[in-house]
Length: 256
Image (tube, rainbow, N blue to C red):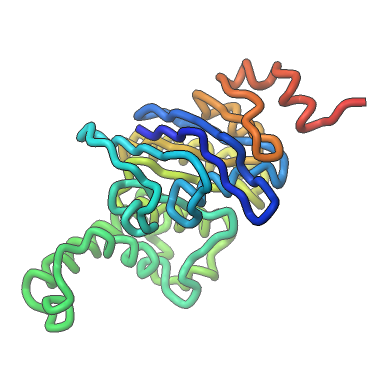
C-alpha cells in the first residue's frame, strides 16, 4: 500500500533522515521506533506533505491498485487519497465540542460546492445530515458519544487521543498514521489503547503505520518494525527479531 524509496530530508546542514526505505502492505500494522531525535516524525511529515525531501519517492497504492506519487502533493490532496494522520502533540480544535471536531473531519469528502453550502440547498442539507450521523457513529465506536457536547479540551488526555483518531477516521482513510498515540498515558490507558487500535483496524479496514515509544505497545501489535537511529535505518523485522538485534539494543541502551 505504501512504498517509501530512498528518502532523504535535510534541514540546513542537519540530515534528519538519510536514505530511508520501507514498505507497508495492506492490512498490516507497522511500527517505526528509535531514540528521541531519530527522525521518525520527520518521515511522517514527508509522507503527509508537510515537508518536501531532497531525495526519494513515496508511492501510495490504495485498493484500486492505481499508484499515486505523493511527493509534491499538498497535505489535503494526500488526505483525499486516503492517507491521514494524528500528531505527537494533540491538535484538536480547542474551542469546539467533541462532536464538532469529528464533524469537521467529514468535510474532506463533502460533495457540495460553496454555492450549495452558503445557500443551504437540499443537496447540502442531505450531506450535512449524513455527516452528523456518521460523526455520532464514530463517537460511539471510540466510546465518546456520551460526551459529544463537551468542549474537546475538557476531556481527559486519553479521551482526547481517541477524539483525534475519530476525527482522522471521519476522512475515510485507507492508511492511518499514528504519531505516538500512547504518549502521556498510564499503563491502564496504554492497554486500552492497544485494544482500541486493533478494533478500529478491523472495523474500518485500515492499514496502520505508527510511531511509539511504549515498547509494550509496539511489540504487541506490530507485524513489522522499522528502527531509526540518527536518521538512518538500522534494523527491520518482526518484534522478536527487533528485540534481539544488537544494533537496536546499542541505540537504545548504549555500550560500554
